[in-house]
Image 1: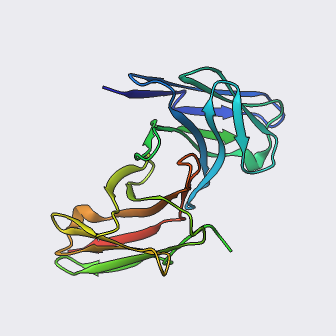
Image 2: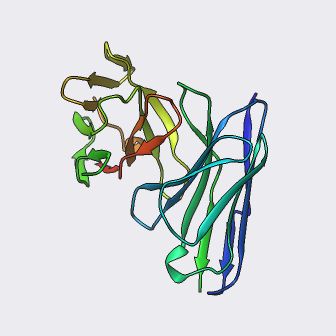
Length: 111
Length: 110
């Protein structure tokens, strides 16, 4: 069966520090991968999606970036965090035409 | 205009009530539709897919109207455990881009 791992579960980082969140999927090949962010009390905002290794589509201009170095690995990064980067970050995978499955999320607080 | 728009919440209903959520989408070429449920501080989980002919799963009924670009979710005989945020989800023609609505918050009261 397919599983998705996302870590860490919680993170507190100072403003200006770098960020690296990692997500890996097991049990499937060539999934579409997604990073979403959810601010407190708000909906999910699509940040990036990827349809293959090295292929990244950005939905919202910001100081975040994403990379897909391997088929089932998706990384969200920032060189310098802003206070506004705080939120609940969710990684998801799906195959074409099917539903999306989410990791358990990372709750990021930038202080 | 947002790509996916949902009814503003919150909905406060008594146990046993029937409640309906609506969702509209802007891309007429959208291909896949879903309803997700999200509990507080948790990841969203699939509630049900939405098919063109409409579909039912127990107390939940989902409908799609492609002409009006409209999706609905009906919950009958509401339970306390139905309290959550319900997210409408739309995927584009290629199946790559998956957009979530902002969600509708439901509170079911005893």
